[in-house]
Image (tube, rainbow, N blue to C red; front, top):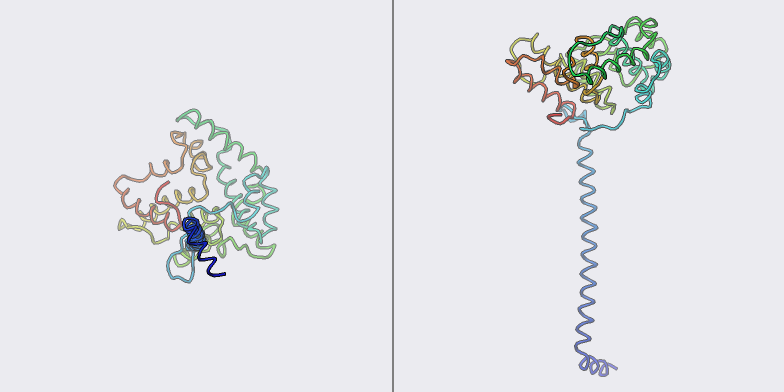
Length: 302
């Protein structure tokens, strides 16, 4: 039998060679396929680790950095806040849902209504581009309608906060005691409050807490004057807060500024804030702004 096989091989050398090449080719393809699968798995794992590394780690001993682009608001109340037809009703309901971040969103709605309250007389701005002016006035008037009755029910943030506390429970999205939102921020607790806000995953929470605490945070260079430093940090906090909340362009702040002052040359709150920073202090301000953006996990510029 073996002799017959050998004779057949001798008479069909080309066929045998071809068969050997086919077998070797199949083996090579199989090996390559396994390597590609291995590489794919390694790249997927590396991507997962890279994504996880953007999540703040309170135990690391360094200021945590939030993801550059967080998901939509962490609770359903975030969506309801943006679409509420009557904020007086929204606030009543939200206060009874502390587990969903209701106390925070009730205060945020109250702050929005308090800001628009003094601008609700429909006065027409006197300067700036027509489209910007008209858009700002329409936004302010719409907010005024949605805010009807809020200030009558709760004249101040303290009154609203006290009413919410009477219902029991604690809102996990609010700093303890409402620091930086209801009560003044404290330097010794500011970093912890900002950390907690960034950990919440809710960009509106992060925006409000950072805005409220920016003045007492230790970020960027110094002018040598504590009062001036605080003003510059607060201005930088305004920019970072509107970037976090995605409402710099045609948002509440720039619309109210247009309606209130008649300065409607800009439809971006960042431009309005930057115009108020003295040129002599701009370099120091820029270091503060960059530090706050890094603190919030945002890109260096818009």
